[in-house]
Image (tube, rainbow, N blue to C red):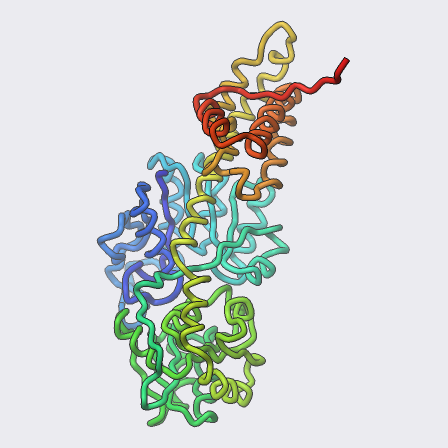
Length: 469
């Protein structure tokens, strides 16, 4: 596939990452390239040069220490600059001849303009709903053309008023890059890491650590200076250590040697990569019962309490310290492996491309319906359009609607769409799919191998049913 990844422009896509979205974008781009796909990453100019970068916004005035773009008298505001960067990209993106747009921007422009481009689009909803994105999705849903996906069941629920039955692919991390620490450091401490921002509730973690009588190490950049000055700085004392942004190895050691990781979001956390990273190190969680934390943190990996209850959080720290770190690591290995996540996204993108090709074929079939209804003319052209679009092989092993992967709702919708374009063609196509399903269910391995080869060669299958006598 030729994949165009649209990145968030708040920060460059480069380590040390400012947040989970930057880490996600880096990892998914790197791994899709490793799988042999041609990838273009539309991101800001300061992003990692090892990635297949197509810069769409200059980082000349970006301050990596504060994560803020310095305002210049001769430059538009950050908001307007991002608007124009995405607008220019979307007006030219078809010229890249992409198979799919993989939108991770969290910006309204790519969604608003999705109906103006030929290339199909998948959009990941990485955050809870917010005003600009809600308006864009509401407008796009009037003529739907975007496939949405999000990172947890809770996030899907949060978006459900706008996006019905949103697909969920849970986040993953590179487990092998995180060293496991079977024991915490002799000198007991807790860790909090991430963006220092009101959404992440660091002040609650500090208060709870003090009540639990445990020193706290804080790793992360200040994303909101006002919040830091007003609610965090006044709480700092000798028991609190500010470490700033750390590289991967430093962060791994800091998390791994901690007795417990405090995770204290105050918003509807859509997933929380910090949870997966801490668990991979073997470090138990003490956190708030909000957003997707209730999905990610399960029995034996940590304790969750009501949001804002620092007394209960202090008690959770004491209990979490006693959990089995080996079990926590094993749980992370089973549930947060990045290769599984990438495989799911790869399958999703392939299925969207297939649907787009089939949609184009169905438009031609519908436009030709009056001629193909002539009983003296075989529907050769219509079947050829379906063949070219991949519809005749769409249920074979490894294909987007592989019978082995439980895609019944999507398959039924496809049969309905073909019948809607042309009922006669729909009946022929249904016979083809039914025949392949019988092969899938009842054929021997030898028969299955031969008939799948026949299908891949373009043969049309059918089922003929009659009564004896």
